[in-house]
Amino acid sequence: MTITLFKDERALARALALQIAAALEARPEAVLGLPTGRTPIRLYHELGTLHAHRQLDFSRATTFNLDEFLGIGPDHPGSYRAFMEQHLFSRVNLSADRINVLNGAAPDPERECERYETAIAAAGGIDLQLLGIGTNGHIGFNEPARELAGRTHRVTLTRSTRRSNAALFGGEADRVPREALSMGMATILHARHIILIATGKSKAKCIERMVHGPITTKMPASFLQVHANVELMLDDAAASAIRR
Image (cartoon, rainbow, N blue to C red; front, top):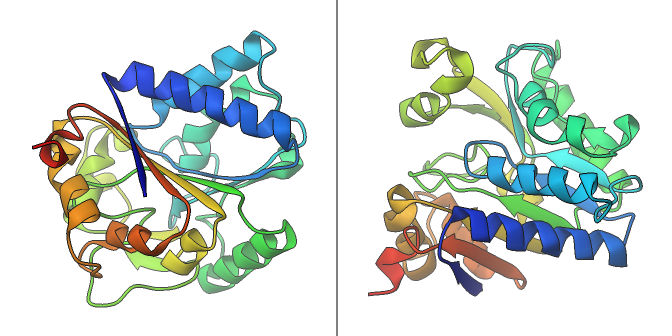
């Protein structure tokens, strides 16, 4: 596990955007796994800026988003599909047929999960998986639990996760769907390269537990310890508990 520290969120986002641009230049057909949430917004802004300056080409890349809320369609303003359209897809030259996001309005959620796994396999697997981390240690929507699902699955969201997503639903946590669809831990861990980004003091404790604590289902991100090619990119605040 490689750890790189940055003075602030902007410096981190800029460095990672340049790294992604270099990866796509070396392998234009790369398959990327993408997160949502507050943390990657600045990264997506930087990617859009690089593309506007013709320093980044997504035309042959394929993307798979980590998760989506259950019960709402891609046109819902609170959906992660809408989030991605606003912050990234509308700003770069990704082909529409190479964008993959789980359909939260699918009539058969379990079949939708199976379809997604099949699509990932057909694309050759994920080359670079980007991750954020929740304050409770979740990655994707894999919440702390007695056991974790391996593959893309239906999940019940914790109250804290729904609160974290309230901004997408008018600031009201009660309006956030109670369930979601998410890549599973095995799906994530099968990515060839994983980069987890974390910023802010609120992430410091879970970063410390992820890096130095035991591997446990109560801290899903701790399973990244077993992956052969993981990078943590942290600002000083998020790294404060591991720098003591």
